[in-house]
Length: 271
Ligand code: KIV
Image 1 (cartoon, rainbow, N blue to C red):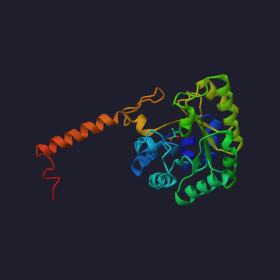
Image 2: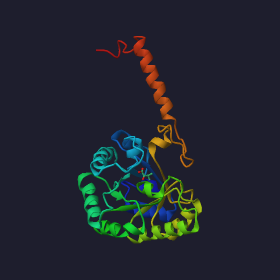
Image 3: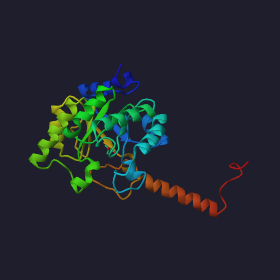
Image 4: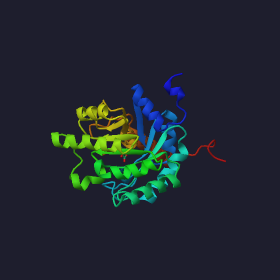
């Protein structure tokens, strides 16, 4: 049997197996039931309820305003659409920064109130204790290092991280701290491909890249970005797999024209 056929429900064990076998891991974000169902039925391994919903769903400039209640609301919708993929939920800004206990309590709340399979936290060494505490309670944790959008005001821009030798070694140290703390996987965002390769080869948990090159164990993109729905956002790491904004515009224009020309609804579409 192929590995694909063996997989019924993706779990942390699946991720370990995929890394061991050198099979790439696929991940995308979702914030609603319909999208999550489409991604899952298409065969994606991991659905992330990302706090990027603050940007692409709520229209905010940063992810900082997103709340725990909002993450839980979206996750409840997403998990209803997913049968196979692992669903991981971003812990929003200030839900784990205050203290280890606060982070632990909020991770537990996400797991109790949604059917998600794990949580994701941004940061390296400085949140390692929180990651340990959460994983010790049996909650799978995904790390996220490199460009961490919740720290945008500290970074000052969304430029790539890890270009200098010092920044590169900090990020490598962070990756090791997150892996040692018990995370099952780690997102590497916007760092040089060579650094992502070094990290991927130095730790025994899968790395999932976004703007981190080809050597990661898997890749993630923000779904509205790769489907061409987020028309004003074109970073070089996003490959456009569709142009849904154009498709939607065409469909809506046809709908408007049909109504104005009294062509919709037809007799067959009426009762
Ligand atoms: O919030 C998000 O969608 C993310 C991905 C970009 C990894 O963290």
